[in-house]
Image (cartoon, rainbow, N blue to C red):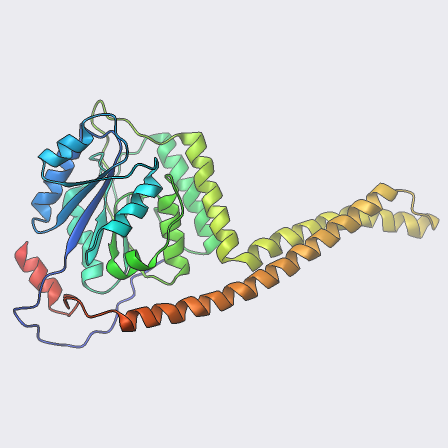
Length: 345
């Protein structure tokens, strides 16, 4: 099904003039982006003058950090190499009400940030993805990039029964509740995949907003290693599918083994009826082994599925307790807050 914004019912309350604005943080993970990072910081500063702009430098060997600091960004460093580790640090270290994450390569339009954060301001979503592959987007993709993105999109949509258009976008907005509740493990470029899947499985509302991706400027280059990172992303999809849908994962594998065991088993049974003898003992052993392995996988899937359901119930209760015990922050989420925000633009 298409992931659609879920509009929450909100009471019609007249907001006071003293209602504070949401604190917005722009998070920019960077590795060797000295050619573009200053422009990215300035563009987002122009669009969100009250936001805190953080550049997380991931062991750059060029002047990325210096250029970002000159443009007015707050510089943080992450020594563990990999975008996933940078995102983990950003979520842990930065405190805000709304988070905007964007790459520092200058390919994402800063002007689209208002459309990106609007669903969070309006309480329609906790996660908003800038979709480069949306039907209304006009993105400049290299052919290999487009094929790879489409492949991962098809695999994820088929496994998780959704209809997302872009699972690898680096331009996203998050609510505070999502950032502080989510736990990430991916260390590399698979972090966007992990964010997408965990958003779906933990019940957060996702909205996709079309954005137009532009080409990198001359001299700038992508850090993605196509074969290695592609295998890592696909492995992340399958691993999270196993973790969040164990009955489907192990059940499908078990059924495949059982069907595979029936084929040599049928040959042995037909020969036995004809001759009264088991003439192909290896076929018989293979058939029994495959069927037993398939049954064990299905049983394992049932057990893990039951345990997962209990943990999901426990997680739900803990999240409710955390929400109830969390002190009320600035109540920018009241209905008039979006209007106040847009009035400042």
